[in-house]
Image (cartoon, rainbow, N blue to C red; front, side):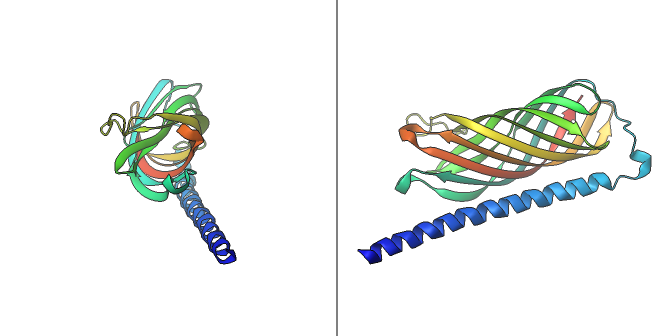
Length: 218
């Protein structure tokens, strides 16, 4: 009996350590991406120090990219703990410029993952704020509704048709590499953390990190 208890405790400890390591790796990757984009921003020469790109009125952005997502269920033997690669298309952002550097936005980030041979999407609808720290470099973040749903192309009646909601937080940063008239092309990185409540009092948590490009109009 003691041997079985000891074996169970070892397995539990290994599982906890595995989850911790995965989260640490993802956070380190996110910090590295944020640092690289920040370095690009501060590397602007003095001739570009002044803001010479006019942003006003409504803004719209869609993005595409890829990254990794870590999913955790507390459903016991039916749960899962996995790190997967996934795509982030499409990601949408709507907003309004309060001035040339500050915008209030609503974002719809998310990523595809696979569960029981079905494709699902973990994302959200996030009220947020975007601020241009430098002429081309911006930071963006907020909190809102997390949504765990079937991928729109893989909905199956009574198999993969459940929609679950909860709370999510998001932080991102980006750098505008090309601008013309009212259009800007940026490279960006994003971190999304969220949790939803499933049936039978099951919790599903997700951490996702992505790199991509955004197409913005002001």
